[in-house]
Length: 391
Image (cartoon, rainbow, N blue to C red; front, top):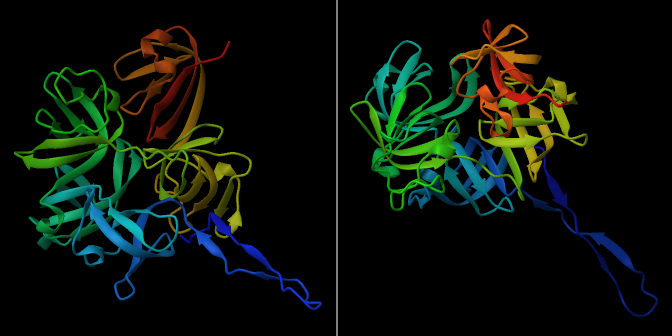
C-alpha cells in the first residue's frame, strides 16, 4: 500500500534586498515533510547500508531498535522484511523502531497447512524443518467463525538470546477466573497470571500488593509475556494492548474488526478505534470511493489525527480478508440463554465479542425494544453490539 502523506509543511520565507532600488523577492524554502508521530505496519524492505527501512511504502532512517522496551545492541541487523513494527518520530530521520510481534516462542507442531506456537494453532504453511525452532510471528486480528483469529503475515526464525529468551503472546482475553488467577487467549491457550510481577495499568481493586486484577481487561486485546510450561502460559507480565490515538497523528495498517451500521466508527486490529466524518477520504485502486466499501475484514491503511480518520486506503490486492457480512435487527428482546437471545422471535447468538451498551447486562434488556448490530458467520447471526432503542 502506498503512503499518503498526512501533512507537508512548506515554509515560504521572504528575503528582502536593501538599498539602491533593489526589488523584493520571494523564494520558497525546500519542503519540510512531517511524518505521523506513530506509524504501525510491516517492514517492506531494509537498506542496512543507509541504515534505512521502508514501512507502508515510506522510507525511514533508523536511529535505534528496541524490543519489549529494551534497546537491541545489533539494531537494524535484527530486522527482517514483514516484521510488524511501530515507529515513533516527528520526521523521517532518527526514528525509533519497536518490534511488535504477535507471538514469540517455539513451534511445537507443524501439519500440512498449520503450525502451533504457545498453544495457538495458526493457519499458515511452513517448512516442517522449523518444528522445535524459536520464531517470531507477525499477524493481524481477523474475525472468524470462532471469534477473533489471526491472519499470519510472517514467521521468522530467530535466535532466542537476541530477544531475551522471552515468550510472548497477544490475543483477546476470555474466560477470566479471578479465583484461580487464569484466563484464556482466545479459546485455546490457558494463561496463569498468579505470579505476574506486572499487570501494567490495569485497575480493579485487587488486594494483592502491587498487583491489579484483570476484570477491566475482559474481552480486550492483551499482550502477555512469560514462559510456556506444560501447555500453560505462565505470565510474568500482562498488559492491555490499546493504542491511544488521541492527540497524535498516526498511520496504521490492519484489518477492520468492527464497524457500526452507519460507517462512522470502526475498530482496527481489535484495539485501534477511529471515527469517520464527511472529510474522510477513502481510496481504492487510485479512486475515491464511498464509505460503504468499508466492511469487517477490510484490509486498510488509515491516517488519522486525534482519532479521526483523515485518509483511508483499501488494499487493492487484499481488500477483504473475510467473507463476513453485517446485519441489523430492531425489536423486542426475549428468550435469553447463555449463548443466544431473540429479537421479535429471530434468534441471535452471542460470543466473547458481544457488547451491551451503557454497561447494562443482557438480562436487563429482557422485554425491551433493542437495536442489535452484528455479523453473519456462516449460518449464524452473531451480535456485536446491543443497545436499548431510544423511546
